[in-house]
Amino acid sequence: MSSATSTVKSSGRKILLLENIHPVAHEALRKEGHEVTAISHSPDREELSRLLQTHEVVGLRSKTRLPAELLQKAPQLSLIGCFCIGTDQVDLATANSLGIPVFNAPYSNTRSVAEMVLAEVIMLARQLGDRNMAAHKGQWLKSAEGSREVRGKTLGIVGYGHIGSQVSVLAEAFGLRVIYYDVVKKLPLGNSQSVETLAELLRRSDFVSLHVPDTRATRGMLGAAEIKLMRPGAALINASRGTVVDIPALAEAIRSGHLSGAAVDVFPEEPASNSQAFKSELQGLPNVILTPHIGGSTLEAQESIGLEVAASFISYLRDGSSLGAVNFPPLSLPQQHAGAIRIANVHRNVPGVLGSINSIVSDLGANILGQALATDERIGFVVMDVEVQEAHELLRRVEDLPTSIRTSLLGQV
Image (cartoon, rainbow, N blue to C red; front, side, top):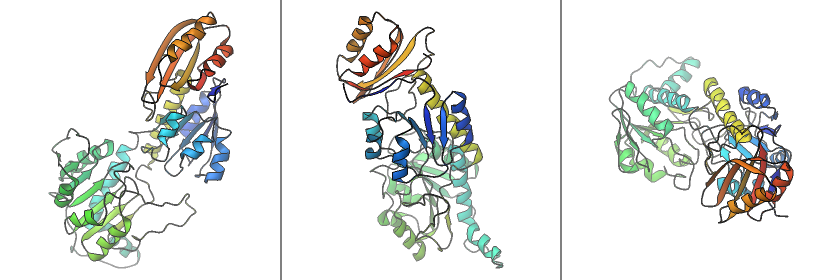
């Protein structure tokens, strides 16, 4: 018997949804016959490890982390969904090696984040955060000093993906000039222009907005040296990942007056729940807007994210469609053939696997009605519809192949 994982059950999966995922996701999954457990907080490692032992699917947001050691100790886990854009909270390579696809929601909160960024550009230009707090304290600070229009100013966007490009479009409507820097060549929208280096963008921008993922290349990408390159009086906005900016260096740039302000939505360390205290070196500094990782936290975005990732779950569990998974060979599949069972097999990507599977099907006198295969460098993913009397025997024998990682029945049996 190999160390691969076999899942005989084809429906009614046990799904764990963490961090207060929108109820539309619960409803969509329960309507498909799945058993959903919803938790409003981000569990600590011990609690999460315990929960993973009894659930086959997990959905999480940005606070919960799934490192390699947790994934390796959760043999039942077969599917992960990040109900957000980022997926850095999951060890994607380990999930891939275990045959676990990871889905996310790359589009659903784009508009919400972009709108917040534009609001913060104006707030920083007009010092609205400080003026608001002063008025609440009974202080009447009616003055134009340090207050500017954004029209005609330059917004530099670092990372011109789904959100960055949307910020670009909205910014031009406010009369901002837009430049952007991305490590991948991207088509400019509107009148925006790309620049060759991050240093050039920092030197030319009145506002810098960061929209990059958490990778080795982006961690600490804006440190003291980079912040010094920014124009005197410029402002920084970070709604991407907390690891991207050196917070002490940013705080010092604000205190020294080199930067006129900052808006930060993400932090290197964030509270696990709303009941925990939040501390940052940026607290109490002038013209600094601090928000609790809410860039995509609008009712519209959370509902859309819930629907998007739940739809990916349903499509994968019912049909085996992996299109959109960030760490998995992509397959887009039609509905299951009538009268057939659908088997999915994740295996090591070595020669001869498909031949071995087809030999088993032939030995059992079965008939293949449809078959699809996709591979990446490490694994292969094959889905087939088969007319067979001994479905569980077929499943067992395929799972027993030395190349198999994970084998399951999908759809209707």
